[in-house]
Image (cartoon, rainbow, N blue to C red; front, side):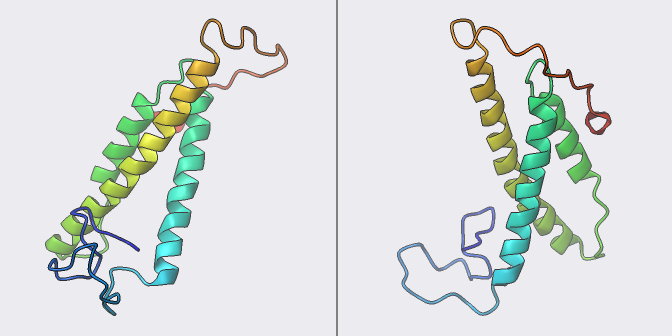
Length: 136
């Protein structure tokens, strides 16, 4: 089920709560196919972001997070409806923040694996990755 940033069911009136057994409203924010589309795009963002962050020697996702947030703020909306734009950007920000938390957690796990006392040396055959141009 897709929920908006306030935690209410998407497309609901706000009077519903999680204990209600009422069926989903027909005017939901996304169709089932739309929900799969959004989930797929978020999955791709997570995979791509993790590749960029985990390739960094310092494993610090801060610059990636800042770049993603800045680009989201710079998004050119396809609608002139400011209320719809604000709601859409807020929902996108909510979903992207979840992805950024996952990437940060992955970086922390990798850091802990490379901490003193964990795995001491990495193979010499592993190439060093240059910093990504997307982070600038």
